[in-house]
Length: 165
Image (cartoon, rainbow, N blue to C red; front, side, top):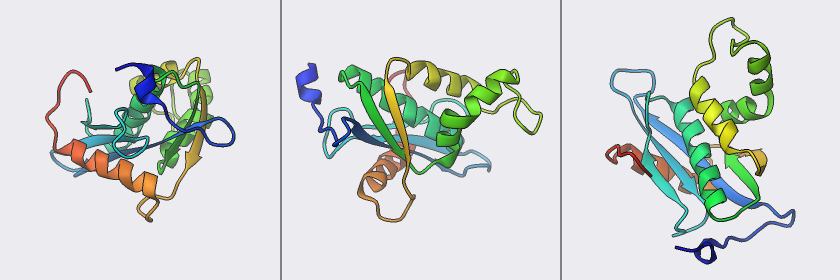
């Protein structure tokens, strides 16, 4: 599929909007299972619904969803991406905490090693050469894009894990 098929509308500031979400049934309990959702627009070939890879937690699912959104945007030749997410953890990690974590040798403010360090580093490296705007949207309050990303993430929980998306 060529980039022509990936064309997406830009908002008045030149950004393409994507909605990302992570879901994890049984988060923090025995045998959790996670999924990720990436939603550009209805029936778009860049949308993703996939199982979470690795440790099954909600926060890791949020990070992986954002990482996949960035990969999809680059595939489509997008240079300005607005990532809409209901995860304040994800936004704070990417906009505030990463520089501090690096400065402190990847030790959190609680004095412990940063959880999800590898996934955060992958996301940070993936975002290079792309202008990202992080936007918080309230979760589970009927926002259409967020609801679609959530639906894709929940469907991803049920999918078998494979090596690719």
